[in-house]
Image (cartoon, rainbow, N blue to C red; front, top):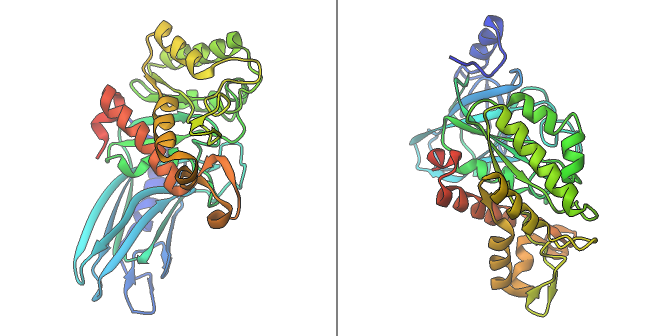
Length: 352
């Protein structure tokens, strides 16, 4: 069996020590917390494991009062949305989690995080009674290659769609988000911390979702096609399954319609989503047309209501018509998941 944690026997002993469910701490309500966990709201747990992929099982609830808990891992990856438990009841959930160092953005933008696995239980009344962490065996890994609209954004309110789709993935598959702010197709391909690092980990049948365009503002059609084709051929060379994702729109309106800039016609006149669709057809690679899907969504909401998908000064302290709020990232991620299901892509069998 393939072990993805990189741990030897000593490492496994360390994991076993950390995942006990004894009363390592007690909060103000004298509720016992699992080993490795502390705090009340949020409850934070840390496990000193090596980079790799882990099966994580948690038990929520069990207290005398009702609970409401959401679960996040590493750099703000949502694993479980707000979930209620009745007084005295326990609910158990399992996930497969990718652990990297640095966590968040691979180039360290926004901070490198802590080595090991960090779990945060938040919500209106977070409760956790048990946590188990074990190395995963033969998981399907879905790798994300992209920019700041995809990446694990370490600091709110900025949120990438890649850190929201994780809540929809069942145990046995994990999302490894190599998205990084400011990257074009060319810079991502050439930076050793990005595409080369991702590619080194791809195994047979792993999916690699490739989204670029936001930062290819001066990229020629020929260069854009070449960069995408190179990524496709190298992923296939490792036995992986490449999937192209056209970039989500910006919120730039002319009347009630999005502008050509919003639709990623770049500064040298290249229609980047069209080029990506053409590469997909030529290379016989699946294409998720997120540009078209997000255009429909944003235009259906209109110039005013669509603002909630992005960052608003009144709510977020900043106005930004490219980057998503947590709500917006959830909606855009939902469009990606919809396409994965519709096209029966590799991750589809593992979606909740």
